[in-house]
Length: 232
Image (cartoon, rainbow, N blue to C red; front, side):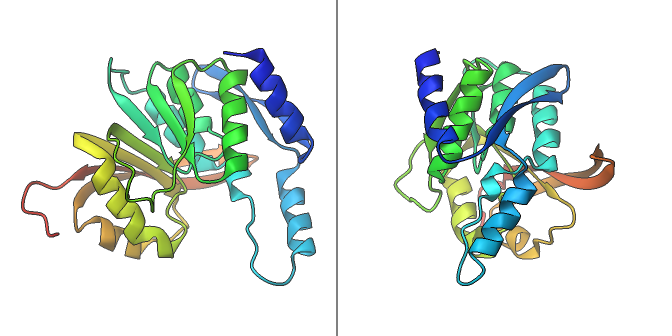
């Protein structure tokens, strides 16, 4: 991987954001993660500046607790030669980078161009050779690749996206494949699961993690396609 590419990315990123590279321990590994410095303060400043009208806030830049749990879970899964993993809504790319360092072959994706720059920087900072970073819009019906494993954390917050997301998962999951999604337990998403269960079945578990002196309950879902005969 190219140091010059990382240098160029850092020049671009640092011209627009105040950033830190912070150590992030997941399992038995310590990642180097590029993130926006004092993210919560940065978000408050944006809200103050854009107090009227619609705001496109950079939630892709937040280190979500659900990402830690999902990354740790994937790191405990055996890496299988030839199996392709897709991370959707990757943001900083923590899940995909950690999975790649654990031997999985991962395509890290997001729709936001700045998120992709941060994710690529994090791939380079950690020398995650099994990871690539690409832009992906799951509303683009022309996307025709399939993956054995699809993963995402905090990707079901937008109710308007549910039909497109579920159809994307139908098109993109390889036969016999599996989807792992993680979200904060406080986020209520009954309409997503109503849409999802038209075509998929799932199992769920709840885990409690501790971060910054607080406890958070995170839901982890394992999702598979239903047998033939699913409604169209």
